[in-house]
Length: 389
Image (cartoon, rainbow, N blue to C red; front, side):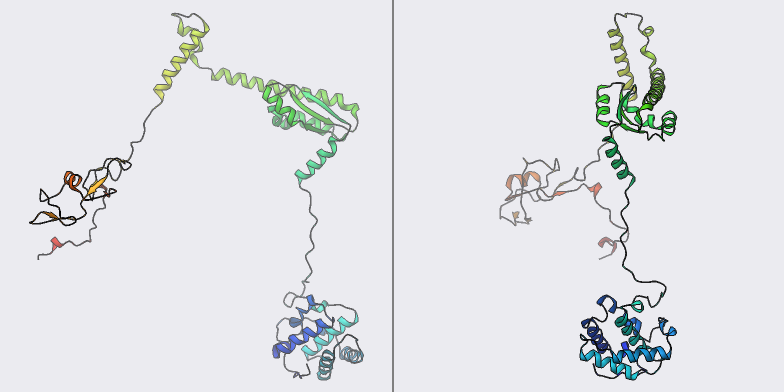
């Protein structure tokens, strides 16, 4: 720590080992906290293009005051190594042109005086930005969470009244989008109108096919509840009538022509007979319209092929009753003897029947694909027949 530094040399790039010892001593003596020491090298270095402008605010008198204070200050926790190093820097510092030494003395002076580390929080390139820990933003409640909380609180209120609307529960979505319901909500919004649709009861109404919809209405003052009830029932009746009319017109247009009894004037006995004849005629029309054009199955690659061992024709790849019995060798001429088992052969060339009758080995079939499925030779291939030998 007692090594001297030349004034023209950068304190950080000149001797990094010595600078590492300096930062260790500053942290050990608790002069500068550890989180700020990481920026000490960029603040003190004089080789950087972008430097902090704190020295422009200093004068020669300020530098003299800083050096005197550091010479006189005696901290009980300061080690002799750090004290000797600071005195060595003070002796070498004569003017503000010595950027490294002046900057180091100024940072240590501010840290000892008022524990401020402003010079170690500015970015060397973007000097307007300050490194601050990111503050966690308070988590805002989503709309769904807010509605759940609101519903939970309102359901405990005593001003909640049950109401049954004369409408199928499947039409709740259309009821909410209807202009009459929106008008009721706007008119009674100052009274705190809030409508709950009872999902459990409405699901039971849907299963039993009842024209009812269970609703709970909240109002601050129950005096206006009869008016709200009358208007909501009126809106539900109008919506249900329009839906019934739409379904009737749909059924009328979708009704087939052969439902009239005029087509069955020969022997019309009962409605059941008419229904049976209609059913038979509809089946006949359906059979005419339906087409059973199935794509033909692709032929297997092995169909038409044979086994390379026993020369048996291909039948089915999953057949387990047939065993491949064959001679793995060949017929030696002119003795007509098999090379694999020395058995005599009746003919000069073997076929499937001979292999099955006199074969000396059994194994699985080694099927060969059909010739039409085999790959064709390329144009650039050369055959022996092309040359005259």
